Image (cartoon, rainbow, N blue to C red; front, side, top):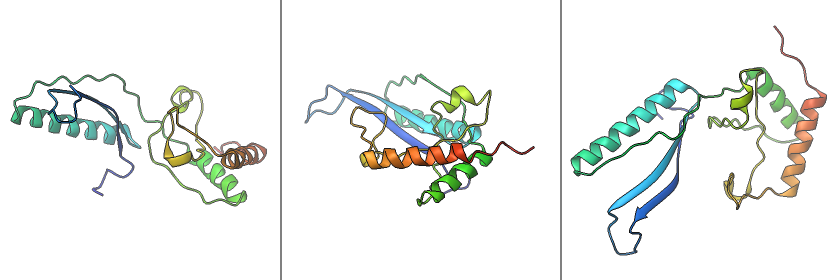
Length: 160
């Protein structure tokens, strides 16, 4: 992976090709792209690169193009001291720790201005989340709850 791209994640969450017939080349297509990265600088560079490539393709193929930014949030880095404590709680419950540099903000976006944040993720069947088909196995929910309880019971305030 090129330098500066570690942790860069892109998701196409919606595609609509019109007219949508099996054997008809679409005359219009709409789609969303969600770009996340550990830092805003890397995310912005990636977005600029993607936009430039889309514009070049549209120009080369003589296509009309409309790009709309519908949502943009800053990156929300998790605090290392909290990540370390969560890792300890995960290990103490007998599980391996995985770091997810997805840039996921979730409620962290609302909290980062008042407190450090960290996130504990519980696996979903097939990796599907934020969707009606999302499913968490009860054993995984139990494991996540035990890790969170252990974190709370062993919480150590940030050292200056």
